[in-house]
Picture (tube, rainbow, N blue to C red):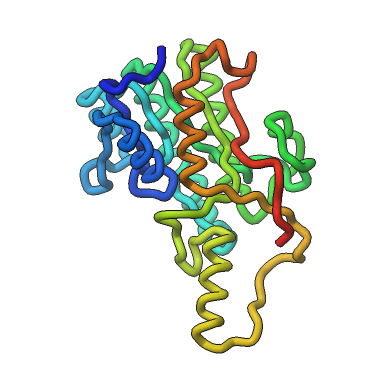
Length: 252
């Protein structure tokens, strides 16, 4: 059951960095039956609106790239928003996909779901093996719940819901907001502002010892489409979640 060009493909979060990259790639490859909806047309925080959308459009495949995201400062300042909004969006879409008999769903998690002291390079087996990074724990817990929700629906209902864990992404449609950006755009913004203001040095958070992996969003989109289209019998036995990252990194 491979994804056909005529299939209806819903991309939740199509205006975000990953969602827009998936949309571009599918469009380039000839998939022209792509479903999207702006916030003013579909409020993903409304269970009724999400249910009605799935009932009306009956998508065959769903890329769940919609999420409330942000960097360390945003996660520290708005922990309730991060856990509540992400849990709500995930719950509504996954459950609606089940009710609409969607053929396949791909949920985008996050590498922050893995323990703070997980061995490098991280593997899928590291999940729930230790304490999370405190600064983004609410967001990470929401993402873990999304993964487990997909696994639970697969086990109980026989759905084909898959999860992927991207590493640190960069590229087109990135967010350079001073509070809500992730590590690479945040650093780029600081360096740019320092250059503009003739600031002799830039002070950044952290000890300089963490090792980060970076992946261009277009490569992430290609990996997502690959995982979505691969046949179930070709996936690792008993595994519904996958880490998408190069096994290399940079010291920050």
